[in-house]
Image (cartoon, rainbow, N blue to C red; front, side):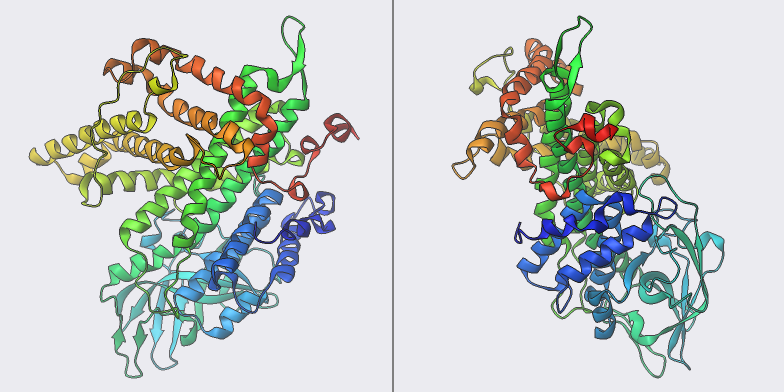
Length: 588
C-alpha cells in the first residue's frame, strides 16, 4: 500500500453502522463516499495521474470494498466509470473538474430494461438539432428506460454518462456517450427518475430513468474525435457506426479495472475475518470431543481453499488494472483497446468474480449461521460478488463470447499437447507430482476439439449458424471454464509453486500448499476424465482428496501467515466475528 494512512480514513465515526438509516441506508453510503473524496482529493482525477496516483486509487477502492461494499459501488462508478469516460472520450475540462472535485457524483447509464445486458443494442436516442446545436435525448418507450442505475436519491447532484444512439440528419451514427446532469436541486427538466423499492443486498438508491426531450449541449457530447460541422456534416474518425458502438461499449473496461480490485479485496477481507474466527470458535463433534473449528479438516478445506482463491483473484486483478485504465494521451481521440485485449480483460473480470464469489461463500459456510448477518460483513461481501455475476458484463455471456472467439477466431491457439506422466499414489516425491497446468491444458484442448468439430460438422450440413451455436452453448461454456481454470493456475504457478528468495518466511511456508489446493481442486471434479485417458493413474486420481487434506494439515500451523497474506488492515475489519471475543460482541 502506497499510503499507510489510507486505512485510518475508515476509523471515522461515519463508518459506524449504528448511525445508518435502516430505511434508506444509502444516505450513509453517500456520506461515506463524500468523506473519502474530501480526504483523498487531488487537483485532478486520480485516474488521470501517474502510476502513483493510480496505485492510490486502487488502494482506496480495495479498502472501501472491505469496509463497505455499497460505498465501493458508488465510488468506482464515480472515480472510474464516469471519470474514465470523461477523460478517455474528451469531456469539457469543466465537467472533468466537477467530477474530480466531487461537486457532482458520477453515474453510468447504459443498460436498458428491455435488452438487459445487451449494451450494444441501446434504443435511447440522441437526435442532433442543427439549429440549436444541441442533442435531444429521448426514451422511445418503457423498454428503453435505463435500469437499474443507483441515482434515485433526490437532491444529490449527479453527472451521468448516458449511452444513446446518435442520429444526425436522420442517419444512425452508432451508440455515443453523453454527459447529462440528472439532479439539479430537485430534478432536471425532462429527466424522470423513478426510484425502485429497497433491495436487501447491496442496498442503494436504484431507479429507472427516462428522458423526454432532454437538451444536451454540444460540449457534453463525449465525441471522442467525432464532430458535426456548422453546416451539419457529420465526421467520425472511426468511420463506421458499428465501430463507434463497440468503442462506446468498451467503456466497460474502466469498470473491470476497478471491480476486479474490489472483488478480490472483499474476498481477502472475508478470509481475514473467517480464518482467525475459526481458530477461536469452539466446536463439539458427535462423540463429544471439543476443539477449535479450524482443527477440523472440513473447516480447513473451506478456509484454506478460500484463501487460495482470494489470493489468485488478487493476482489477476492487480495484473490488469493498468491496462484497463489506460487512456489515450490528451483524451478524446482514442480508438480504444484492441478487441483481443478487451476480450482478455472481460474474461479476467469473470474469473476474478468467480474466484471471489467462491472464496466468500466458503467463508460464510465456515462461519455457520453467523455468516448470514450483515453485522459480520460476509453476506455483504457475497452481495457484491453476486451482483457482479451480471453487472459490468454478464459472466455467462462473457464466457460464451470468449468461447466463440476462441473457437472461430484467429487470436487463440489451444495449449500445445504435452505428455504429462501419470502420477503415483499420494505421498509420492515432489518430482512425481503432476504438472497441474499441463493436466488442465489437456482438458481444455480436448473440449476445444469437440466444440470446433461440432461447429464444423454443423456448417458442413448446412445448419443455420445461430442455431448450431446455441445448441452447443453448454459445451462452449464448459470449454471456457476449462480455459479459465488453466489460465488461473498458470497465472500463480511461477510465484506460488516455489516462492523465490524475495518471499517472506511466512510466504515461503504457505504458498506452495495454497498452489496445490488451487490446482488439485481444479482437477478433482474431473478426476475420472483424467484417469480414463491415462493422464492420472487410478491411484493418483483416488488420492486427490487425501492430497487436499494433507495440504490443509500442513497449512494449519501457518494459519496466521495465511491471514497475513490477505493484507487486510485492522481498521477496515468490522463486526463481531473480526473481534477477539465474538461471544461478547454478538450478545452485548
